[in-house]
Length: 233
Image (cartoon, rainbow, N blue to C red; front, side, top):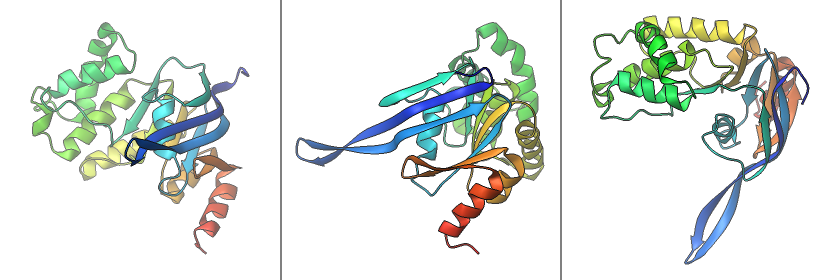
């Protein structure tokens, strides 16, 4: 693994078993023979049609799922997934959920407690932070998840379609935070269907097709080819 490589995937495959009849199962591959590198300080965009394997890939990179084949090598000890699809434990308070999220990110309790005031302040949920998350609106949950994943400053931030959450004022703040992160010297992987944002914010783009790497290159090159394949002018 080269010194400037933060993350390396070698022939990654991710398979699911699905029922195909009585006592009979079929194997479905979400990802297959996928290899690429992410360099330190790079903002990598990942694009592809629905079902191409983008979310499955992010779950592997975050350590939520394990590959069925191949290997993932990383120099980073701290990877965080920022996604609206990841929920909280409803009967626990916002504060308790932040502590659990921090532990899942690999932080020790002392570090989590040190970061808690900044997370609460950024989320703008001071009045509700000790209420059960079950009482939160979708926007409030998004605020809390966004604040937790960004304030902790992970080595690699995985971003899944979340450039703007909550109400209008918070969307402006969260979008600015994400843009600063993606344009900084920090390592980030950004999955989105918004080609304008990917083109503007990413250093390089990979295009997934049926769970495999279809194309990798500059944002303009890859996005132009992708849009042509979709029938866009």
